[in-house]
Length: 354
Image (cartoon, rainbow, N blue to C red; front, top):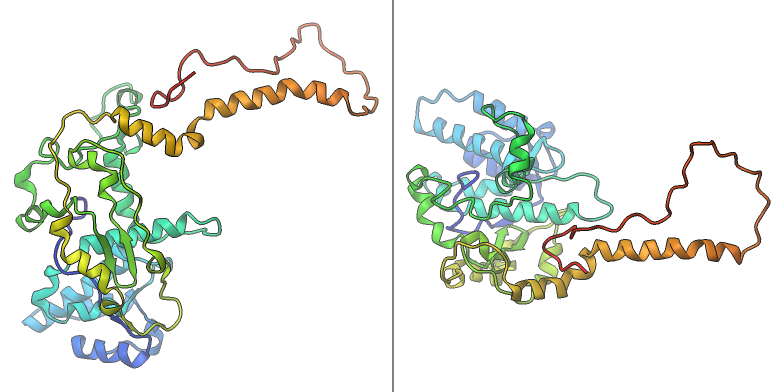
């Protein structure tokens, strides 16, 4: 719905070959020319090579038109959908999926893009990670649609400018893709035809990257009542695979179990009665607080800190004190209280406040 990519269809997977000969042979077969030694590094082909080849096409026959489109697709992969931290190259593993020009649209490029973003978010959460790659445009637009307060202000905003932000404060848009917000007639048929599979709880696959699509934890996004979810799916070793170093593997075979689940995604679609109220139920909140409450009750942590501050003068009296020069206080200086005033309201409405 955000990038207009198909989310159903064939899984984006295949083989990875680290050899230079494999890269050159694939380019010769599809483009009639291979990148030079300065145009690729490892398994990555520089985007400048694709742009140059794209500009050289005269578009006078079907072959030149297909080469033009394939170069454009590879540039789109390297800059938006499957970008890496270098920002100047794209892995050639996607090229074999472009061989049959008539079959390109049958792959689930949307789910592969989402798998790449999930993997990028996972790596970015590590303490030693300083940069993030992946489809950041998808992430930003998703955040702007879901949380309008952090999105850019429209030109025809009301005055004063902060009024719009105050009106939408604490607002989270659950039904961003419902017919009430997106007119059905503006969605292309091939995208709208696969809308039934959007809520499938299945693995997302992009070659070596396998990520889980936990729709059972965001049922409200699809207009359903949110129940306490089951235990989170653990992908095991499949979640830690990276393509650093030579990895000549057929991921269609390596990930056969996950691919089988993907191909049966129609059996994993969420089903329930649609609801209009997106507020969480008491049963869900009991589960949520029991699972994560200790990490969210900031008010209780503040009370513990205040108690520690009250006990601090007594603890200092037990230790030998060094003589300090007397501090002069001005006539209008007032002593600041050690303990702040307690809240008269619940700082977090979604948690029980005592």
